[in-house]
Length: 347
Ligand code: 1HN
Image (cartoon, rainbow, N blue to C red; front, side):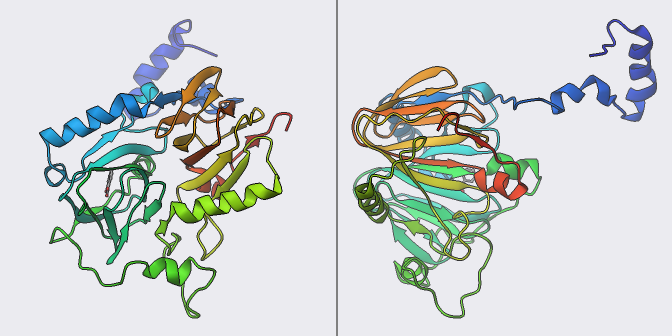
């Protein structure tokens, strides 16, 4: 690397010729763009649910869901504190909604997922259809769709929010709008979208809308049944155990254009082979417990814990008992751009 420190002629060229004209020499920084392997500020990390649950519940004594608009504690990656993100391109948070509360209707260009962590019976409404949510359900609110949440039960409800906030910020395409009323009117019966689009059928003249799935709740009961049925054939993947991706029935792609979501089963004592991929991934433990080694660091996990695997960090997992893991990443973007890579090492 040529540096201005040992070349005073270059230093004065940079400062006096280039800098006033908003010009900068590529040769000083080319090595940071042209790397042989990825660099990331994102660090492997785990949030143990039993250590953060009380902190989240305490927020309800301090602020209402309506005051907060969304009462969420952001899972901030320790390598990117103050940048409101869990990986370089994605945001994650845990949202709390107490009995009787409403999180008012709005819409934005960011795409969002909810993955239900604790409680059942609260609803998310998307574009006039309500869905009642239960633990393990995966719910989407596609870009620019009106959505509100409400809890008409008598117990708190907590879910994981995953959004492409940092990605949309990078592109500068952040738009948002408040709905004039707290709640968007309900125009379709509960269960309408999954019946129409999520049952291996589709209205004959249905036209694809915006690249997101027309199914907006993928209930855990169905997902779990699929895993249980598939385990009977004992066809385990060496790196993943049994791993499924959530799919948009319109086009066979991911449920949303920017965020890929997955559910996997690791049977008791299963030890995955070392694996790495370029999409930094957030995991949510749905059932069971186990241990992962991520970028050389060991993490013990149990139900409702959340952990992050950075881009290209080697990962392997062992289940102490049958374990089910939900995960999400920006894989659809990387695949669409033709830059996604994986390395299955020996497997
Ligand atoms: C949002 O709209 C929700 O609708 C949650 O529940 C988290 C984080 C950033 C921007 C919008 C929600 C969000 C968000």
